[in-house]
Image (cartoon, rainbow, N blue to C red; front, side, top):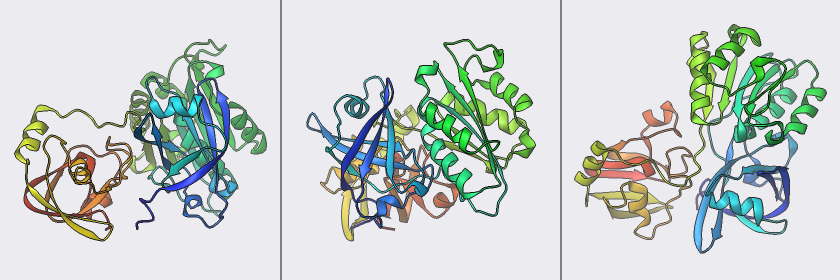
Amino acid sequence: MNAKTDFHTLRVSEVRRETPDAVSILFDVPDPTSPLLAYAPGQYLTLRRQIAGEDVRRNYSVCVSPLDGELRVAVKQVGGGRFSTFANHELKAGDLLDVLPAAGHFTAAFEAGEARNYAAFAAGAGITPILSLIRTALRQEPHSVFTLFYGNRTSGNILFQEELAALKNQFMGRLAVYHFLTLEDEDIDLFNGRLDRAKCDAVLSTLIDPAAIDMAFICGPEGMMEAAEQALLAKGVAPSRILLERFASSGAGPLLDDAAQVRVAAAAGRSMKVVLDGRRMTVAFDAQAGNILDSVRATGAAAPYACKGGVCATCRAKVIEGEVEMRVNYGLTSEEVAQGYVLTCQSAPVGDGVVLSYDA
């Protein structure tokens, strides 16, 4: 058994409507020593549910702080989203969901003696992990300050609007929140429109001193994240002080380009040794599956996964022998890659003799 990849069945305590298209889900975790409560601020949970006979897994960020002693995630409905539609319209208190322990690198170590200046750029549901970070930072570091730049379509779509306002009142002078709306006009033009590159440049020139930023967190649509990251870099904020969180909502990986298709075809039938839950098995690479993860699962083995998009790192394994090519990586750190870890949903063997372990 693997504590990090074993699902726990939890009862839903509350499904709370947060906006017209988003809910938060509170889980009943009766054991205060449960590994499910050992999450870091900014991390996510993988939820699993049978929906219309299909095993559906999705990642959702925890929106509370470990200091709160509870486990709650937010789910915003997306067009065609099976799990998000189910959560927003069918899930109710008393229902059961399977939950993996928290994972993810979108977090920071907060220490009481520090006096830091944090900044965050969020749009839409991207506020979810950042809210967890704000709640933790302001409580654990009483001398630190936090500035949030938050984009939405309308004021009615602002997720956790009341909670952010309450935090501003609670931490007077230490939390600044700036809202940017695309479909409503504010008196000050700076706050009208999306957080694109020009807007982020203007924000960093007027609302915060980039030189004072100790760490910046970015979460939201890809275009907004790229704009905020590039604006911060252009203002001299070091890459090591910028942390991004990407969401994978489709449950499927990116399409293979022509070169990747050729490499996958060349790997067809190659024999691999795979260690999973203490068992060592021989697996033939399935070119139709297109990756190591699905080749392993095709044998009936329960290799762990969630997003299959190279984001969540649930399918992480360590290459012990041989060579593996990983085409997309949003979930592993550079240190993990240097240690030989790969995302098996994005990987194929290069040559024979590959041995990899999900247990490492």
